[in-house]
Image (cartoon, rainbow, N blue to C red; front, side):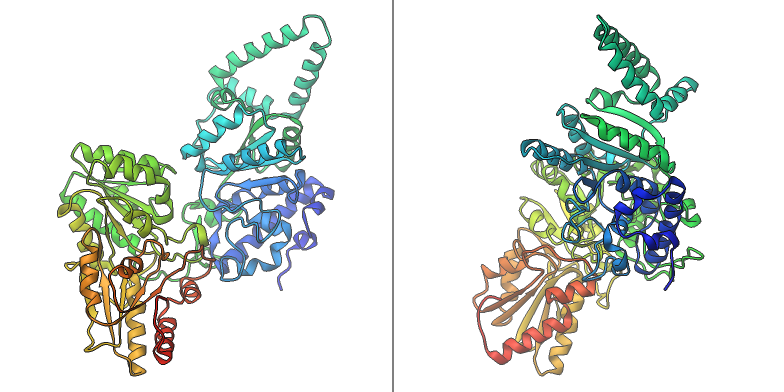
Length: 622
């Protein structure tokens, strides 16, 4: 087993407090080596974790994460925290079924204060914990670590506005790895910034205020100095936004200067008020490939740690195919615009952004804004296409209703990562979108099973429909079923005379349904397979046709039961009905095939279920 030097001697955060800064720097190098080696095998978030090594070590050294509450926004940069809090030996199970989560999970460790996975919520949660501390008269520190990317989400500013005026002792660490907050300008600004990050300056400032308070008129002098200083800062430092919200601003500080970060954290701990520490870091630091291409190495599959080369690229996936097809339509139609929320690469819109820069809009982590902006575009005659992950679209629910659906505006929502996503777990599995989209009057949901159907449905959504439309498709490549049945609202994709059972499904899960039907045929059971392509106001009529095909219907879905097709079929079907779905629960992380098996919706599980029920001769709602 490979050894990692000083890291092998660390059993917990307490061990950090006895190390010199030189030794801590050596530890940081060992942590980077360990993370690269481990993530190269399991996949995961690489560049973001390499960028926060010193910051994470400093936080564990200066705070007690078993008692203090340290919240990493999103949590995709919490690997060092996990390694130092007793989970290093399990790191080989990262993102695997039954293994460590790629995000913070309290069930893993009491040092993880909350579930994480989505961006921009850390300051809100931290403020809630700070209020609880005050109300319950307890003593612990609360820290929110938020990146400059997450700061593009409006919720972060709502929370900062509330936290700054709360009076609660609270530390917000702004991890700025992309200079998205305006740089300081000019020599005077740089000089004052250096002063502000100097602990000597901070101590001197405290001493001056203390001495002024002891002399007659000293308080007035202190206030006058503060006002003068504030006027100068407003001209030369980009701190006024945070300070006007009520925060004491510290920084910016080099986030890889461990000693400076530790000293400022120690200083912030003593301040009994809201403090924002601005830390500058380099995403991907310490591993040359990720330093050069941090976006490419943000979320990675397995790769060769020596060369940085990824395993051979697989087949084209739905996201890439969608991006390619949208470019084809946009080439001929200048009304088409593409909108995404900080996911141009993930949603396949990179080529669109390159080819049509004036019609591409990345709004940052602001899904609400994306939906409302699309409504404005549609109202003025454009054809907006909004590409957002299923679980991220949840943020824009009010805008889907208020800004788009009530006015019947023609906006196409391309819902990426629908269904089971897998390794990212509960916060990323798109198992709720059918339920929440179906509840919106006038919303139509298209469910392509393959690339040919995605192309046809995108064309129909753009040119043959009105009002809001959602096209939901999964992460990854298409399966064996590659026929285009999109012209039919519901299509029979496997015939069977006098079937013993009808399998009803939608989307990519048709591949599991067809495979299950083949297994059942080998066991002497005739199974007909139907696939729903459109979920809209005519759904009951379509399901009524399917219901007539056999007495026994099994509805197979990769979404929760509530609000799914199965519940609608239950209102119609008079024979036997069984519902196989993800259940009304949140799912664990693991591969897609693992989670299919957990839910009992993979081909073998479905075939076994039908076989056993047939033998038992049972009846009722499954």
